[in-house]
Amino acid sequence: MKNFELTTDIKQLMTADQIKHYGAIPLKLEDDTLVLGHHSIITESRLQEISLLLDQKVSGKSISKNDFDQLISLNYRATTSQNSTKLQVSDDVLDEMITLAQNVGASDIHIEPIERKTRIRLRVDGALKTFFELPISDHSLLINKIKIKAGLNISEKRRNQDGRITQQSPSTKNLDIRVSSLPSLHGEKMVLRLLETDQKELDIAKIGFSKEQLEIFKRAYHKPNGIILISGPTGSGKTTTLYATLKELNDEKVNIMTVEDPIEYTIDGINQVQVKNDIGFDFAAALKTFLRQDPDIIMIGEIRDQETAQMAVKASLTGHLVLSTIHTNSALGTIDRLRDMDIPSYLIANTLNLSVAQRLVRLLCEECKQHSTELIQNSVIQESVHNHYIPQGCSNCHFTGYKGRTALFELLEIDSFITKAIKENRNDFNSYLIEKGFKSLKNQAFELFKNHKTSFEEIYPLLID
Image (tube, rainbow, N blue to C red; front, side):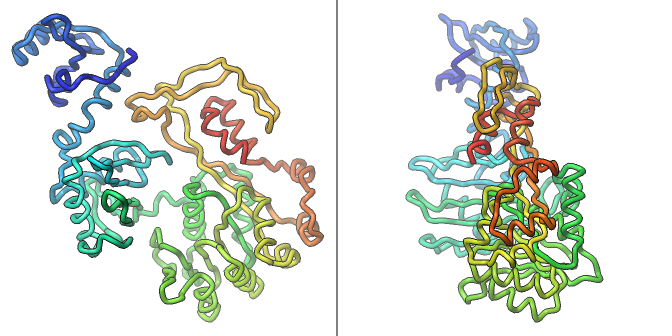
């Protein structure tokens, strides 16, 4: 099948529940007979039952399960969102939206008013996909119900607001939901970030490090002082790596303090502080206070400016282990970023323990990935591949072609050789790193592609970074 869009009069002949019950979906009218698509064997008696139900002559046509699923997804999802799955603007609307998001493994729910409708998209494996559409007339009611639960002002529609909801979801997992509203052209846009309060998943050994990488990382965070910096774009998993490290270091014998904007996870035994920019309590101000609180380990949500970078260096020089994130494209790029913040090279060399760059890459759906012999040539890696796989899309992956993600890490351990090179303002140690077995993000991503785990389009942004 090529065209999965059904006409309105055909879609209205059967409900989503009836399609699921009979295993048949209306496709088209031929003369006075309704053609029903089915992917499994359908008996004559079942066809007669549908004929009686619809008061219409019917005939069966065998189609693939993938086509059957895609027909339902594209033509009946909006309807089932308000009926079968009961996504209505009711008192239980938040529970129902969260249940759906958890079922598909979504990290965020986006509620977006468009001119004549409200679009609800979920971020699954890092990519947004529309799951439902509601009438624009229901938008304000939906937003207000969420605002009440998040403790926001329902009468304030001209300014952005931020709130939190803590609740027990139907799946029995406690959730901390970060709520952000923003005025837009057709009404308030709202984003809900879902964060599980259960910290069992924050295991440093299970976030994606190879055995060798984990050994390097552990060496760095077991040092009594120094700085560990984790870089990468938004959504690359930096925060998860930081929290997994803190969980590993959490012990009654040490005083761990964090300053964050916002606090994403709460961990028992750790002193967590929220930035309050409106009263001048930013990262740098918090760090000044921290140094009078007898800390052993300090976590800074992000090093954004020169003052915060200088305070982080000062903390490490006075005997503290400092962990933070920074926005650079590579582990090597972190050194240049600190120099741009006017941190002297000798201080970088003396305080930096480890620079980590990380990314999350979507994996191809094993149920539907399609083989391709198209020649792929990459000038950066200087390799060619003609045997690979491309995304297709099926019900298993919600028709995205991808299912799940894997983390890639690039670790630059600051040893005596690199310390000397940094002090001398040199960056020409690529050959030394290769000898030590250093693997760049580019090379790791291309290996993932060659091993048929992901697509070229998924890793391409990494190759040109």
